[in-house]
Length: 137
Image 1: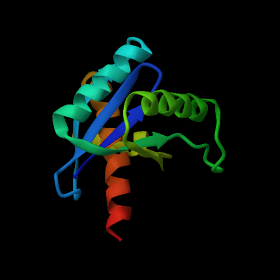
Image 2: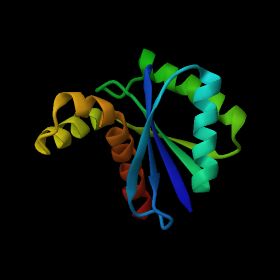
Image 3: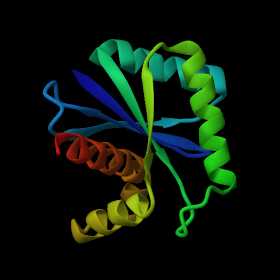
Image 4: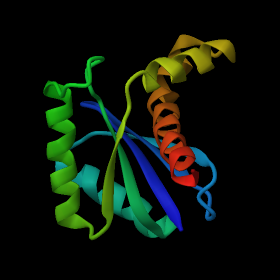
């Protein structure tokens, strides 16, 4: 069973997918957002290509655990996604995942211009891996 991980932002959507056994997350791409219909169609294409059975979406909570304006945007995106796919959508706390992804890429000595292109994919990988690790317990 493969699980899709998404890091939904205003300009891009980071995408990761689990291995068939659900142990590890691998980043696969960053979708440049064009419009909600095209964004959703791209996700549906990925769902079909990888035979995804569940979707994990990062929910950007404030540090105190409350939901802010970006969380509301992600929740609305999830509502639209539910309308076009019949899969379970799980919200995963994504606090600090982008910072962790940035740190990892800096430690790998990746130039800032290259980091910008993959940061959302790496963040989606962190979101999905966090979910997979909790699900194993």
